[in-house]
Every structure is written in structure tokens, then in C-alpha cells.
Image (cartoon, rainbow, N blue to C red; front, side, top):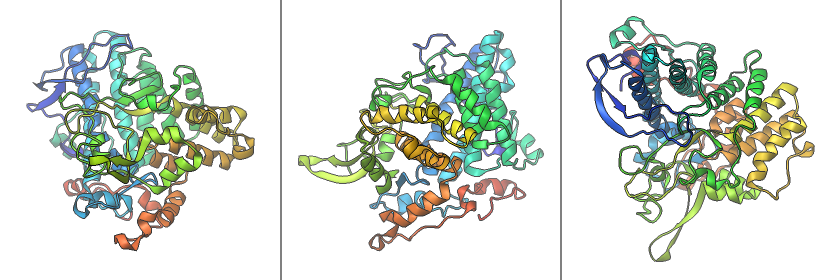
Length: 502
């Protein structure tokens, strides 16, 4: 994988492409991610089938982002931390992210950056050759898919790093170096990705093969990005876009069923990164990454690595709320081993299923769910009115009551002003999307990152137990809310500006 200065076009080198299903208008068909060949890029794009194969490679590239995203999001939030029994050597780079003392050489920072720009490069290659698709409807669908995935990568990059490099065409390494790339501003990156999402929304279809990007997925991501950018008129536009999606999907009756491998891509899922078990190289690694260490095969085939350890804070949040349904679907606090021995330790179970080979789980990773649409709409209404309306509280309660049918609903008594509603939203989103890589981005968007994390560092036992030999952490400053530009980029072009503080 090359840097932004050497990303595509790799004429004469082979691109790893995978087989594709033809575009069809039946949601019963599914996106086929099975790899079939290595093909030469030069002269490859001749027709719609070739573009479709390149698109599937772009979908497949999202696995690279997801493999490292938890370390840049959940770990940097109050949801997860480093296990108290972590080995120093294996977990040092994650611990640095957890404690906000990360440096430009951190492997997770570097790997995620490379993965994001690989998705961008593959998307650009599709867009550069989209004219070979003769059918205008099909061409629009394919172009919309590529723009969505490019925008998704940029949305994550700008939230994690601030201003980054914008590249919208394929190029040789020599061309990239000749352009002497500099970072665009945060505002410029948002303008670029918002334009992609607006165009994608107008091109995409609503009824496509299961796993492919739909109009509603692009529209939801567009609204979320608008709520995050908060430029003039952005929040009003976001509310309008989200209202159009209401009623197009529905919440599953059971929270746990949303994550069941027998119910994937249900009517609650707008978009998810798909995984396929069966030892074909497309299985999910998260059951093993997040499973308890030294559990042999009692919890997950091939043992666990005990990353992404659920904090005492998130555990108590579930318990204090009486939220058994979401807690049981998301995490466990013990496992049973040989001769019935019980080991008490927290671990994430949301992406756990049975499979035969290590790092080969079937579980999809949801990116956009209908509960997200409802809560984002409630957020937009609160922002636009300066206070929650009865309608906004109603959307909040739809999500809340699905998990806890008999619980006390939110009302004007406990969420009736602007700030109380923001806090209620933050709490509900934390429980609803626990371990789905949303918490850190929510804290940033809602303006709660520093206050929540500094309280977390003061109260979470992990950071305050001298017997474990860990240093206290915090308080964090504004500059620590973004990550350092990877060192390899600075080595290629020393004139690139590093983020302040690094």
C-alpha cells in the first residue's frame, strides 16, 4: 500500500479485484465479495462488468478501515480501554491511543490512514472510467456507490485528523509527487465530501442488491456529515434529509436480532460492511480481536486477544439504566472454561458468532442503522429549535423503548431543554451504538469530548490504580482531539504541516 503521494495509477501492476454480482433491483440478492482473480489494470475497464468488479474491490477495501477503526474511536472514548491484564509489548500502541499520548509512528494511525486512502484511490479509479457503462441508470448507480465510499473515507479522515489531502483522480506516483500535495483545510474537506454525498444521493437507487449502497444510505450519511460540519444552513438541510428517510426502514423488535448472523441486512440496516465466513479470506476478525485472552476455544475459535476492553463506565451505564437487552447483546463480564471454571473479565460480544477458523466470523459491521436516523433527526430538531420538541422526544423514545419497553420514557421533565436533551441523546446513543465505533465521533459532534474524557480519566479505576503501574491520564487539550499525520507522509514531503502538538 502506497502513500497519498504514490496512490494509483499503477499501470502494469496488478490490482486485486473480486467477482461481482450484476446490478439488479432485487433486495433479496446479495453483494458477492468472493475474490476470483488478479487482473492487469492497464486497459482493464471496457464495460459495466469491469466497473462492477472494481466497485466490489472498493467495497472489499472497507475491511482494511474497519480492522483498525476501533483503536482510533472506541479506545479513545470512554467505552473501551486496555485490559488490566494486557501484555506491555502487544498493547503499547493501543495504550498510547487510549491515553492520548499517541505519536506519528503509531501503527494504528498509519494503517488506518493507508486503508482510507486505498478506498479513496479505488473509488477514484472507478470514477475515472465510469463512462464505459453505457446504461445511464446503471452508470449513475455505480458512480453513486463510488462517491459514497470515497465520502465515507474522507468523513472519517477529517473527523480523526482535521484537514487532509484531497485527491479526486487516479494518478501515477510521479504525478502525485509533481503536484507537491499539501493538506486541504477542514472546511475544504467537508465541502468535497458533502458534494460527493449530494451527487450520490441523486444518482443511487432505493432497491438494489443487498449490501450495495442505496439512495437512503447516502442521504443519511450526507445528513450526518452536515450535522457534523454545521456550516450555514447545514443543520436545517440535515433535518430535511432525515425526515425523508423516516418510515423507509423500521426498528427490529429485538435489539439482539439486529446483530444476529441469521438476520443480517435487516430492515434496520441502511449500510453495513459485509463479512463472509467459510475460510475465503473475507471473514470478520473482531470476535478474536475482542475475545478474552487465554480463553482457548471456550469463547471463540482460535482464542481471543482481549483488545477493546469494555470500561467500568460503560458497564455501569448499562446496569444503572437497567438496560439488560443492549448490555447482553453487546458485552459479557465472564466466561466459563474447563470444568466449569468461571473467569470474570469484560469483553465485547456484539460481533461474536460460531465459526471454524480464527478471524473468520460472519458478523457484518453496521455503519448506518435506522436508530441512527431517528436519533440524528431528534438531534437536528433540537439544534434548529434551540430546544427539543415533542416530536424530537418521541424519536428518542422510539429507540429507548425498543431496548427497554417498560422503562420510563424521556419527557419534558428530564429532557425538556436544549442541554438536557443533548445529554439524553449522548446517553442513548452510547447505549444503542456501544462498540460500533460511534461514541468518539458523537462526543466530538455534540461538543462533549473533553469534558467526558477528562471525567473518565479521573473516575475510571484503570487509570487510578497504582498497583497496575499505569500512569494517570489527562486532562486532554484541544490539540489532542485530532491524530498526528503519519510520519511516513512527512518523510516523503517534509513541507507537509503536522497537526499542532505532535
